[in-house]
Length: 279
Image (cartoon, rainbow, N blue to C red; front, side):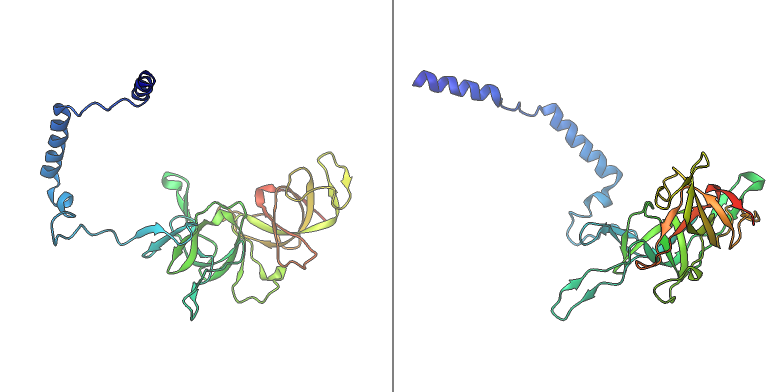
């Protein structure tokens, strides 16, 4: 039994060897590093150790994790840059009489524009020009389901910085529900098109029955009627589309006015409109 116990101890030592003691040279190097830091930045390094000392002030814009960990909370003013818009996604949190905090709620893919950036600079040198954001503050916007942004909490309300290029429609925030096509405005570089469900046409010219092709898939050319036209991507350039035009297009994104609306609408980029049907 004694021999067996000794064998077990040897095996244990091989599996968990003892750590070597810290060499005196290593300890001296560590102390030298700390001394050098004290010489270069004594106030900031010792502020947290001296009784009554005041730590350096933090910047006015403080970012911290918000409740639930879904976004971040921002203290301070947020000013969008370029073609970004500051969009309020939700409502302010409410606290019940019993002290229960009700989380903010928001309508999917919609929000109210709080402020806008100065616009995007396009071109270089003498040809450079600023293209302003075409949506005014106070409007309510619908944005693409593919839009990439990180929501954050500002003054207890969920916000986001969204690019103008990710918008699919805008309308007056006081417009009654359900929305109508006449209430919508198209964003820059896009047209709102009401689908013509009577027929679809493939690239080879074959007519497909209703429902045979999927909207926005690019597999078929879709026919629709323009109901709204946004400003051009380039200032002064004619988008070559007008309300009432019948167009063939590809790669649109659906804009849902109401769950009961039988007609379908798509936000289509100008470059994806491939032909107009002339009377």
